[in-house]
Length: 430
Ligand code: LLP
Image 1 (cartoon, rainbow, N blue to C red):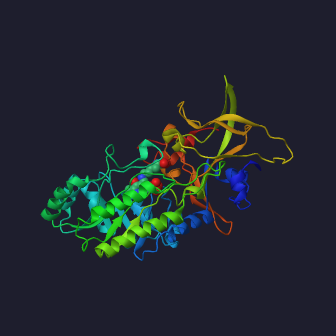
Image 2: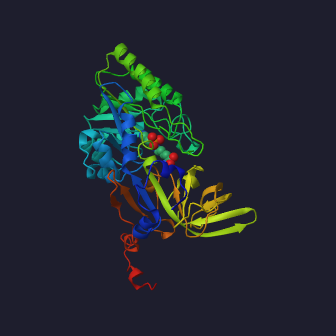
């Protein structure tokens, strides 16, 4: 069935299952995950640092399906949550309090209490939030995010440090921090930062690590239990160009030399933490969709699919690149294929609903399936019901090749769950 599927074929992503059968059974579009790839990416991090108190805490905003979280938990990865919903998915995946960190931004005092009671630590992001926390939960432990001034990321919308971001407390506000801590008898047991998302080369990250370690020296290190450097580890989206992987071995070695000398110099005995999101699930997931039309407008060939930006928002939001593969039912390998530039779109009523512009692919026909690769992170988790379309099912291909439906496709009735009006879907004729 693979008209053009070099990547999924090379790793046997579908483990012998026919993508057309999956779509017939679970409907289109469909998120599909491969357990082996997910476990491999978890293990990449297990050897990152030799430090005995080093924790990898997965940032679950990238993908919070509890079945996938459960696999990460089995692999010894902790979890970061940033909302009550993410906290509940972590608990549903079997995580216990000691392995969950609540890393927040602009939350209510109720949410602060929820975070502090159900997680090993709550992380806050401003003086105002620290003060609010002091009032509702005096005499507690707290983690505070600082802005290292160094940002990095694949798009300006995901750079989260430096002068132009809403994140973190500025280091020169430390005296005010100390005053608030004292006033409410809070213990600053954690500090964190997150410079941004998707670096393929670790120099800015390591620079920020150095910065945070230097900064930590001004604090009461006996009280400090966690120094958390954030996430941002990128994956090679440009598979056709054999984009090299981020060198985690070298990153780990450089990181360790900073951590070791910090421990030696300061006697720090707490833990270190990182928060990778994307790196862990991205490559384990793809989204399959159906081609319903092809058309020509002036110079452009448009290929119309059911993967709108309600299903995969990244191309629309960040001009993000996802590799595209094409499947044709009963495709005969002898048939010649012609590669031509095509613009692949979704079915949402906005001109920006484009997955790829003028991508050189085999000429796509109606009835073909397309797969958008590396959609396991910030794919389903950013999907929506825009245009009142349904969020798709999520399917896991297990290591033994079994299919597990890990999230059902929404129904029209689900859309009406929060609207107090009669749901007319039963009266529809087809
Ligand atoms: N820690 C914190 C505090 C974060 O805000 C994030 C992501 C992470 C860790 C994990 O970052 P990662 O390792 O995934 O880069 N929707 C965007 C990415 C947004 C990242 C938001 N924060 C995208 O699709 O590219």
